[in-house]
Length: 356
Image (cartoon, rainbow, N blue to C red; front, side, top):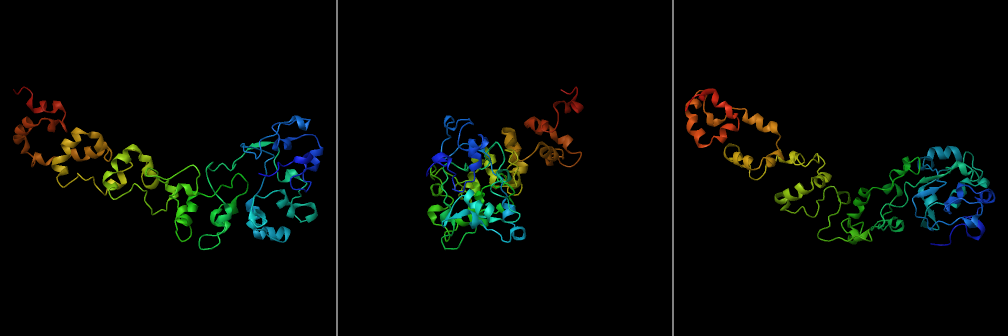
């Protein structure tokens, strides 16, 4: 953790006297970097916890990775360009840049043409307080060490831009997001580059409070695009109806062509792969009783118009035109319900009015 910054009568953290003028002037919003509130008597202002973990940042910095990584522009302005390691490596180890890092180029004695002066706080910092946009709150239980990510298991160096691909376009701290989980997959699922203990499926490799077990399923973004979840066994194709009905949205996270709607999510697949009971006799013999018993099952794949389009055609049982009128009596007496599937109950009265 180290010594709290500002100890020894507000001795500047980097020994460069960056804030000497501010410490000698009247208290300002700069005080809220370390103190809970601004008070004239510094000893009366309670200190914030250290290291600071709250989501609010006093005197927030303005920084453009895009500007600093633009080699041609930097060459034209100051005569040289910088790389990631120039700011993010200290004593051979990766570290967060501080004022001392910036002072190498921005100190008054550096006298670089076109570079902001360290004495001009407003050149790099906004006045007041704002909410942190990247407060190291990615995951409380995430274990990550930049040091072990400088090279893979083969000893091949891992370049900064492989994980931080968006850094070169970031114009401020706010639009400099952490790497996406998908970025980790290509290395962590390659046994030649990463040990099996740190595969993306092994929760404990990267998380302190998560363990993998029989019921744990790694999120889709933790898996290679061609890899199936653990529960997608050979029998899953037959048994997936239960999980699909309980959580259709989960299916849609991988099956991207699906709508995610519980009723329509299966449509794209079942249009070409029919359910198991849709045998050759299904259309002519079997679907009627099934539809009468459970219409909602049909509606999972078929809309109302689907049934109407088919049943508006003359059924085969009606025979050729003009013959069914003499043959329909026995069929109607046997199962009048088959008639009202298409015909209204008063349809029969059109011909049978007054007939006993």
